Each structure stands twice: as structure tokens, then as C-alpha cells.
Length: 227
Length: 227
Image (cartoon, rainbow over all chains, first blue to last red; front, top):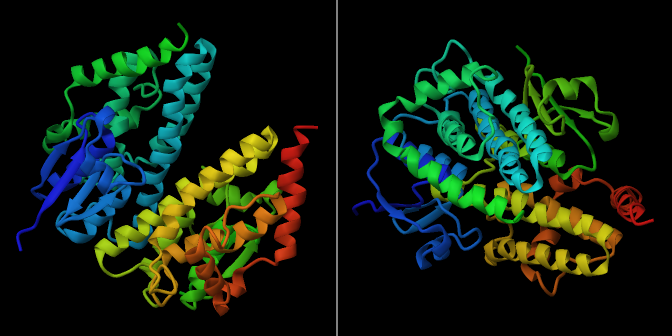
């Protein structure tokens, strides 16, 4: 049987882009289906009935949702160019940090974005909280390694592309600063290295599109409630 | 070298009890260190500096935090009596459901508990939302199987002990009902089977202790803010 592999994603979503990055790093071919977030397709709702969110990976008709779960699946099913380290202890550390980025940093980031509805003082406080959450990620980056995964891109790098690419563009559009080179020198260098990787470049949405989305959708929505 | 294995936990915490259940199911000996939650030890803060929470597994001096990460580690390091299924697709489904229970159901449960500060109407709404979140778990239980893991206790059962044991006791203490046999017949039967398993019984905290904790700590705290 010929393998059928589809990714239901959105080109601006860092969560669906990480699934594509993992597949591309392993050289796996897939069909990409772009989802319009306000008008989600019948298929997306069918494949991910509980969350109705991208990304969904559909492998020979079997849907898998939640990006961290999908990344584990990809690494288990296609063994070439492993995403996770080999040793159980290193795997646990990578999983812990990936989960931390999604739970703690992303949570703090979202709070910073939403704080704009509540005035300058709340923004300053929320931005500082997001910076504090990011410090733990900075501290985990070993200066001797190019990536979290060592010489090669691994799970934490894939999950971290949000920090390395989305955050710098979106924070400029939103008018605050979380990832700065003076406060996060290691993450800034890592971001440069990661974004210059040829496979990573294939999955990054164009800067102007992400900038425009942030300004028109997030910023206007936030400020809208103040008007 | 003789293996050193410690679990830093709290006897009433479903998150630390799931780690102990996994170790006991595999027949792994460990040293248990009880943490007093309001007065966390220096060691717990050192081993889990980002969250300062139980459970932490310390294996030959290496700390691992976050219960789902710990369960994966345990299953990878000690291969006997696997917790996760063998096939990547089944593993993905188990991971998805375990994550769903922690993110979605536990989130809705916490909201129901906290809603008591906000009056009867909010409680009714929050309880209904928690029931809705639980429906997805009920639907995933195959009537032909005793457990989510099939004949044997697996990842979803271990994560789900919160639903099977903590929820029934705590909901009685809190005066609302989420897990009921008429709305959730499959989960109710599963809960009975799971709680009568000899290894599960070893890790369950005594009912009166959990009931008293819920009434004195959670209920009084919630109602306190209304007084």
C-alpha cells in the first residue's frame, strides 16, 4: 500500500509549522492542507473533534492531533534523523523543556499579548513575566552546542522555533520586547543559527505576512476592546 | 553501582501517586520522600527549580519533573510491564488522551472547584463544562476492555486515577457531581475495576483523609473569600 500522509495546518501557526519541520528534517513527503482558521473545514473538525485545531497529521487515514504528540509519533514511525535524543534521561530533559515552552512560556506570551487590552502598566508586568519564563530556556542552552539538540536540530529546537522566529517579529508588531540580544544572548545567537538552516527556512512564513497578521488581527482586536 | 531511586511526592497528590503506581506496576523499588506542600523542602526546590512541585523522580542523582515526562522515562528505562502500547499509532492515542485529561479535564475540574467562590449559578455552569470534558474520556473507553490499556493498566489508566478515585471523593466533599454512574456508565465501571486492582490499592490515599483535606482546605478556602 502506498503511504498517505497529510498535514492539516495553517501557514502562520508555529504549532503546525513544527510538524512540517519534523517531516522535512526526516525527508518525509506529505500533502499539505491549508486551513482557514476562522472557517475551519469539515475534515479538520472530523479529524480533531475535541480541539478542532491545527495541526492534525493524518497517516493512512488515522488522525493524530496535538503537535507534541505528533512529533513523538513522527519520531517513532520514521527513525531516520531522530528528533529526540537516544538516552532516556536526555529524552526526559528534552520533553520537559518542550512542555515548559508550550505550557509556561507560551502561556506567559499569550498573557503579554492580551495585556494590551488592560493598559501600559499591565503590559510591562506581563512582558517581565514572559521574560522570566524565557530565562529558564536561555539557561538550558549549552554554549558549546549550536542547537538544543547538539549539532543537529532536535525536539526543543523544533518546538522553540516560536521563540526564535515568531516572537521577534510579533513583539515588534505589538510594540514590546521579550527576546532581546542583551537579555538573552544565547537564545539570540541560537535563533540566528536556527533561522539560517536551509530546512527551517522552508517552513517559515514570510515576515511581512506574520507582521501584518499580528497588527491587523491581534493588535486591533486587543485595542478594539478599549475603544 | 547500586541504583538510587527516589520519589518526592505528596500522599494526597494524584500526580505523584501516578508515578508511584507506574513504578509499583513494574516492580521497581524506590525511596519515597513525603513533601509538605505549604512547606516544600530545600531538596524539592533544588530538584524542580522551575515549578517547585511534586512529583520529582530522582534517579542516581538526576532529577526529572512533570508526571507525564516521568512516566515516559520510567517506561523507557524499565521495559518490563510496558505502560505505553507498542504500536506508534496506539502510543499517540494514549499520549493524546493522557494530555487531554491533564489539560482539558483537569482544567475544567479546577474551574468547577474554584467556581464555588462565585455562587451557585457559576458552579452549575462549571460542573456542566467539566462533565462535557469528561464525555470525551468516556467515549474513548472500549466496552470490550477492562482498562484503557486493554487487559492491563496502561498510561491512560495511570493518568486517569484522578478521575476514578479523587473525583468521586472530592465531588462529594464539595457538594456537586461530575462523575455519576448514569451519565458515565463506562467510566464508573472502569473506576470500580481500577480501584479493586491490588497494586492500585497500594497507592490510594485513605478516603477520609482526602475527604477531610477537600473540606478543610479547598472548600473553606473557596467559601472563605465569600465571607
